[in-house]
Amino acid sequence: MVSYVFPPPPVAALPIKGSDALFPVRRIFCVGRNYAEHAIEMGSDPTREPPFYFTKPADSVVINGADMPYPSVTKSLHHEMELVVAIGRGGRNIATADALSHVWGYCAGLDMTRRDIQNEAKKTGRPWDMGKGFDKSAPMGLLVPAAGVNPAKGKIELKVNGKVTQTSDLSKLIWSVPEVIANLSELVELAPGDLIMTGTPEGVAAVVRGDVLEGIVEGVGEIHTKIT
Ligand code: MN
Image 1: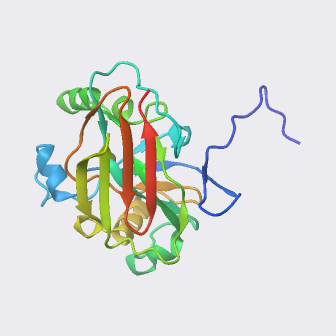
Image 2 (image 1 turned 30 degrees about the vertical axis):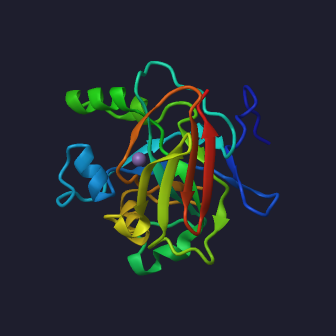
C-alpha cells in the first residue's frame, strides 16, 4: 500500500447534468484563436495559423453557480466564452473521422484571462501560464453526455449583467472539434478526464467585481458565475 507524506489533493471534478456521479478532471487544454473574428480583434491573421494550445491546472475549475474571486496581480480580467469538450476515451494519433467517439460529453465554460499579463507575455516572448492558468480561472457549466450533442453548430453567447457581450456560432470554429482532438492527440496522448476548451468568439472584454456572467452554448448548456 502506498503511503503519502501528506494527504493527496482532492480530485478536481465536474458535476454532470441529471447524475450524482462526477467527471474527474485530469488536464485542461485550451485552443488559442479558434474563431476568425476573435483572432482579428487580438491582432492576428486568422487564415494562416495551425491550432496551438495552452493549459490550465485541473484544479482551476470553478463549479457552475459558484463565485469566481477576482484574481491577484491584474487590472484586466477578461471573459472568454467557450465550448468545452470532455474526453472519455484516450488515445494518440486519433483520426479526425474517429475523434468524436472519444468524447464523453460537453459543457459551456469560461477561459478567464489576465489580459494584461498575457499581453505582456506576448510582447516579451514569455509563457502565457500566469495570464491563463491561475487559480479558479476556469468556471465550467454542468457536463452533458455527448449523445445528442452536435458540436458543429449552435449559438454560443455570453451575457454580462444581462447584456450580450459575445455572440457567435460553433460553426465558425476555425478548427472543428474533431480536428482539434485529432491534432492535439498528435502532440500528447489524450486520456479520460482531459478537458479541451475550444476557443472563444469575438467580444472578449474586461469584467469587474460584482459582475454576473451567464453563458450559453445551444444544445449543450449554461455557465453561470459572479465575480467577487
Ligand atoms: Mn480561450
